[in-house]
Image (cartoon, rainbow, N blue to C red; front, side, top):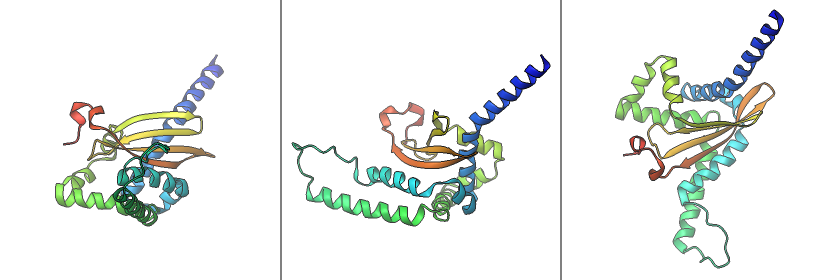
Length: 199
């Protein structure tokens, strides 16, 4: 009986560790961005697929959703074609320049600079102990689910814009969770709870 109890306890601990591990990985990546730990980011992010998925989702912000091909649909206007071309070049340039182990923390730090020098919020956040920062981070998690034993998806609301969500897909590589895909979603105001709608 004692051996069975030990085995069950060990199995429960292993299961809890497994379920918690992708959450810890997501938090650790966030902290690496905050501290500009490019070596950690280089190891924990699969950059080619993250660039590809991020580029695709950002195009929706720059040019609007891509219309479904339809023979009866009208051809896009000259302005729409110009807007799409400019938007694609802007997105391509931003992704190529900043979606790297060194560049992504720079984007994060630009936001921190704004919040520190304009809103004063960054300094207050930096003074918080890690467990309070973790609580604030996890309070913005809107969805988290395992698609398979080796694929975990998490959706997080932007702290400053409730209509913007980030969706990350983490994949288990050996014994390590790595960020394999990243998308930015625009959430319609009407679908947000009254207290969370952007001003």
